Every structure is written in C-alpha cells, then in structure tokens.
Image (tube, rainbow, N blue to C red):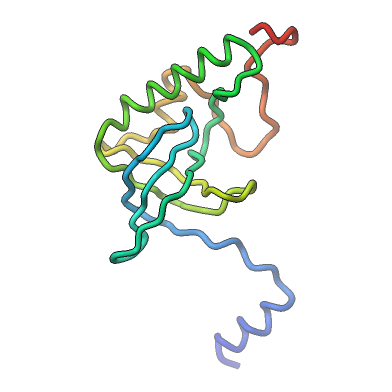
Length: 145
C-alpha cells in the first residue's frame, strides 16, 4: 500500500489536525486593535496577499471593551506598548493556525527587530501568559478595577 493510499484510507477514520503554516510569513501591520489582536496584510505566496486579524499567541491582554476603568487603562497601555514595539517595520508571523472563534488566525508575532511580541508584553506587565485555560478577569469582583 502506498503512502498516499494509506493517508486517504485513514482520512475517513482519523480527524486531521487543522491546517497550520509554520512561517515566517511577512506581514504589514495595518492596525493594532489591542495588546493581543492585530489587523495585518500578509504575503502568503508570491503575489498573494491577504488581510486578516491575528490573535497573538501565548498571551492574554486586557480588552479595549473593558469591564472596569482599570482594565481599559491597561488595555490602552498594552496597545500603545505594542505600537512602540512594532513601529513601522513589517512583522513576521510564525505557527499560524485558525483561531477557535473564526474570522481570524492565531500566530506568534515577531517584530522587525526580532522581539517576540507576546513575551515583550508579558515582561512589561501588560499581559499574562495564556495557553488555552480559562481567562482570569482584569477587574476585581466589584467591577471597579
């Protein structure tokens, strides 16, 4: 049995892993929505460009649609810090995968200078490590931060 035949026969019984692109994929950042979401124009193949939202892998940053004033303040700081780190240079996307919410992808993001965006935001205290567990709130129980 050939490898192709084996793969075809297994395809009906084994669920295939979601597609992933190891990268690096060069991308121009069009907008930084918050500390963990970017809008990019990525070159995925010669002459093939796609615009998509990228969820930065490995971190949880406060949301701009905050539940309390403190979270909003942190979200603005995280977004502004990401803007400074990225600047005007293109970024590189690594390990690009579909995001569980659809409409965007998940990827590691390296700045033009080679810094890992996730690690830099975590080190600055503007995000927390995230690996798929339940997210913790940024506000205290009163909703006042």
